[in-house]
Length: 343
Image (tube, rainbow, N blue to C red; front, side):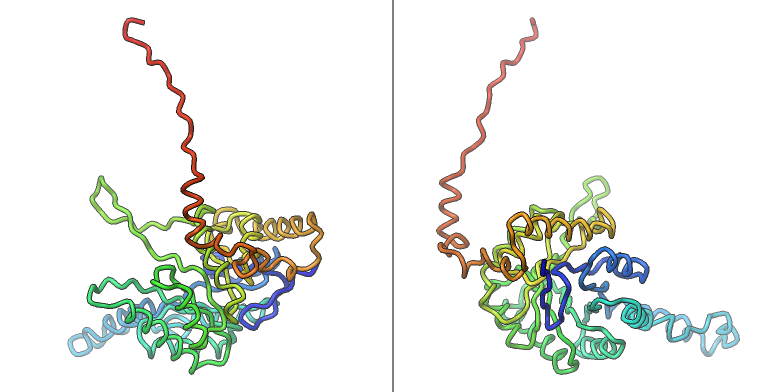
């Protein structure tokens, strides 16, 4: 069974990628994920704002009393390069590259143009095989137009692309007014791969404490439909690699994503739920499905049910929306007699 695939210019043994999570932030768990079959590993995001906030706090503590109490500075520990800034993350990249036999993809979340390019260069120098841009931006400014938001993504990508030579992927948001056009524009601006989709933070409310909840909800298979739609539409229409990244819990979701044209399938939530060993279960389930249908290569399956390959391409468009509504049947309600008080 030939499961090899190509993603953002990297040759992979199979299409399963462990995406950014706490499991990819430690060398031991990275090794386990590789042992269980992960073909590539995306490290947790390096957050520019977190690094700079940490640096600012230390500088404030060590300089606040320079003139009034200089001898007191001796009470502060001297931070080495390995204890602050991006150095711990860069060291993880270096150690992972040395210890692992699969590609290591760094993830970056910046704030400023200088931050994006500076950290991107450092990640490349540390040995990352590729770079994933986690552009987590919620346009809460009501004066900002949709075009402004799109331009921000394109400007960030072009700056990073000009700064590094390693492959670059962009985590694409599903909230653009024209996802397909934005995907094409990102590829033209230099994206080697597109990850569909980035799951933005969505708050909830605690009605007892009247507070905003900041908890993280893991994805589930019900969320597969939106990325499934856009992967099906984009497959075969862009030269950028396509990564599916939402709702993967079993081999069933993996197969569906490959059928509509994904080059790789990423998962985080299923590994957090079931542990690193679940990667082996996903791989075994994919192989079993292919064997049962006498496929000998992943190439025979990928894109088999993309919009471009379907006899009825409208199945992914508005015409199917009408069919779904017309074909829906409400569940039959069985009336139950309510006993009276006398009974």
